[in-house]
Length: 164
Length: 335
Image (cartoon, rainbow over all chains, first blue to last red):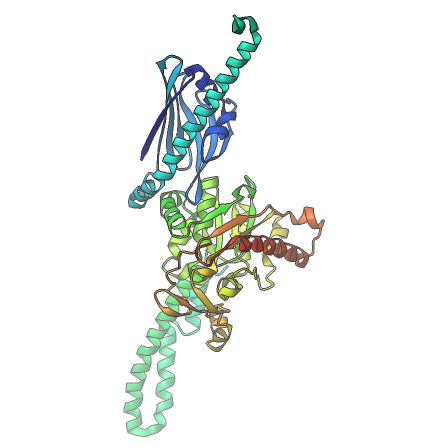
């Protein structure tokens, strides 16, 4: 099962990228995620590994994941190494005027589970879709807040520019 | 532990198999001889019937002996991580849709190494925590982390036995638990066993291990931490009326089958359910499970702890947590 949600964020791809590429921020904006722990020497980037868990129905589901695509300010994708099969992707595309289209894709399932696997994917979909939407909302709020904070800091640093 | 070959041999000695059948027929004919000609004919016919009956009985005893041998044996390799993984969706569906299960603080289980999880047992033979807890453990730590559950012999002898073994269920014995702990696995025990699982519904919020301190001795001898796990809601999946301890004594099931109880309950689809041997359709009661912080008996009670003292402590913290969960519940079944 593959889910796909997107939103427009009023910030540059770089600002968004800096935020999502830092694993320390994951618990602040990824809805339903109860754990996002660095388990590799590399904290971020291609090959970085995390142990993640997300609350789905009665269980915290997840496992070991690895970043398999890391294209700065464009794409970051991960794939599961252990646990329930999953692939996730953040896709950033500038739409002009310092605005960015952010897409969050999430595919999941259990290979070999048969009909029960298919049913459970369907049952889990609404809850996971809510998590995806909420994650995008949180990301948008935090990044836009960060942009406003930076802009304000820049204005304070150059008071003559604002008074002029 | 009982070896199948030894058990089969014992069954043979006790009258099972061909040798037992032959002995039975001759003694029957001898007993009938004083009755004269008619008695002779009767003795021949009777001897034949006795022959057949004893052969059948011997065959059954032999088979039962072999079956018991299989049931009582345990192999850590019976647990199959791939099988568990493929069946996670089924457990998840049951836990999520039927029981609306909630598992709290799974992170209290140490990240790695041997550990003894001690739970209160609920819900009769259709115990919900037996589905929910292994699911939560497997999704949280991954199916790769070995996790075994000690189960009653009769449960493993049931048609569900082979399925449960692949999940990591083993016949309850100190030897099996020790073997699993020494391999570095997490082991789940329900010390209250059949006594606790069939308690009346109105005692549902009470931890009752019936004074069984074996789990404490096991934790002390293997030097592992005890992680108490408390479940609520299971006793609302049917109306459990009585353990039926008197019935177990009356039918001698306590001696023959290690059954201290023959429970009596009102449950679907049987309405009046005696014994619960065929299970029942559990009501969709909300199940809440809370994993409590680990207890290191040596750290808490010194170098040579008194098992009774540790037992009382474990029961105490579990009862306290169960009282807390009970206070959160507003309605039976609904939760």
